[in-house]
Length: 356
Image 1 (spheres, rainbow, N blue to C red):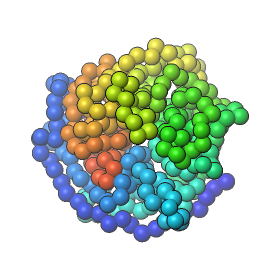
Image 2 (image 1 turned 90 degrees about the vertical axis):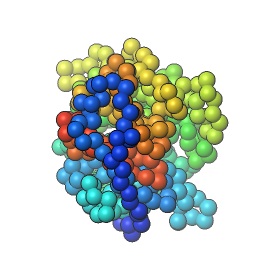
Image 3 (image 1 turned 30 degrees about the horizontal axis):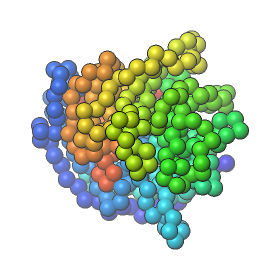
Image 4 (image 1 turned 135 degrees about the vertical axis):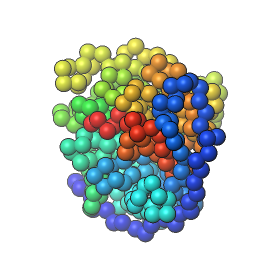
């Protein structure tokens, strides 16, 4: 079923800019290839609510961005909470022209939305995780990024068992969808007791089939794929169990090979799991990749960039970043809860999602 969305008023914003070289830390000369001649960090938008938490999905036809909030008050209930998908429009290189519009109807139909990704360009759709609520199962939704911004759920369960609270999602060039399903919804009290392990799944829209593809994680969280869909990156945030921090648990990025795919790039098993990188400060959160094979990771001190062997190339030193997303060539967006950042890099840098 498709859901019509009402657009509510724009959020008041304050803006600032910072193009200081102190925003960049170089660990390897190769980082210069990524930065280009004139790297710059711009505070694109700021809000008194944490509107810029996850998502960061750029939609090229309208040159706009879709983001997900952290938990905010639900205006339709007395004491309830929700998470909101917002549409960021205007000239995304000019903070003075940026507008942020809350898609409240979609946000209610996709309960506690979190991670998103552009689906195949030919489909003109985005795919979004909904964590679910105490009364509504979570899963994956297709979201129309153009008016009326309708949404439809495409999977809500693994066999007879509702998902725990799907967190983040990534799409391969062949159109398969990988997503993580930790039990954070239960940890924080907006989902029932879990029925499934903390796992990673693959959903095929072509067949409707869903398969469990990776387990053994404490809290699988951020997920990314490389440019040809042959490597899947999974972040385990097991060091954070609800409101409790367990410093000896993982806060780590793992890489897994997709082995035995068909000629059209579908199917296969996830194997050769290996520790790709562990941050030197805080825990890894979201991860995205570029077409050169590098991985960009949201961290407590900004964005760290690793090469395909897991070597640190450099850091973009801004506030705490939960997730990132690529825009036009040479543009990276970073979600910092109350702040949305634009990072201008070399024009040669493109997100892997631009190839799908």
